[in-house]
Length: 426
Image 1 (cartoon, rainbow, N blue to C red):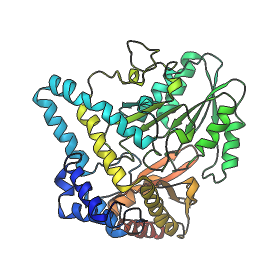
Image 2 (cartoon, helix red, strand yellow):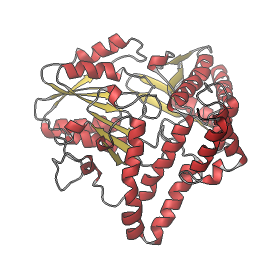
Image 3 (cartoon, rainbow, N blue to C red):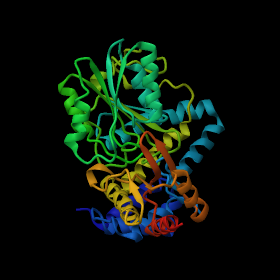
């Protein structure tokens, strides 16, 4: 059994080399490491001292409460400093340090990401965001005129536009699903998808967490039904990876794309593509490769010159994520959402498009006030309380999306609740 002292010493030793020492060798950083050592494997969901120390690992503005982490998350200080260090190194002699030194770090990084994803390193390509990953799939699939793709009106706009381009270019048929959010019945959700499947359906596009409202779809259930019908499964996991506690193979998908600069808190402009091993050969790369029918996942990484600083600093973000723990992180994020949302929904004229049930939502939530425009509420929150959110008007979803993160404190959310009360009274 590893003792607390041994755990602490090993953790601090690793941070001095793998992570940057500037935070974890400060008083706050050592206190955080000590808390982790003393509570290894324990439920820290309600331990505000622990999460306050997590906040100190970030450099978020004390004058603004950032509750739009659904767009992009800030990076912990150790990640920021890694980007700066690698960037300075690159500028000493770019073609040498970038191509001969930092580029050699891609394979260890691939293995590190594979450990988090629970799959083979040979099924992961490192790229710049979920859009790039998913459009690699959308434009690389061998579809022909008349082939059907099932997707929803609540998928991410970039993906919707990509599919529409394939429809216009290749004559494929897009079958759009519509529903009223929130949905809280797995059987019902799965049936909405399966009822749209026909003998011509070749692909189903599943958004694991819908970005507008935080709705979690039963991706594995839908995927399993699709597989029984010989339908390929593409999962948009931009908002679920490093947010929910799962592995990619557990979703039973063929293709998967995510952004690492969201819930992994990796550098801005970093992402991940997963292609099941036996599917790699038949998927064309988005950017030209020497052999477009290669079985090597690396054919999807022919981006030319890229930021090696951003790419290599992903490793520090993974370390930070694993330090917190995937399960612990999911539990805390869901607790934060429920903490403020339950209080707000007790106020007059408020409504939500987000479920309060664990299986159907986690950190993201959308809320509104009847007869008040989303922009009015978002502007009030920022102008009066410096709370940064985002107004949503999409299909039949209207409200303000509020998204805390691991550095968000209960004190921050108490201010949010107070602001809502004032808005409802105004």
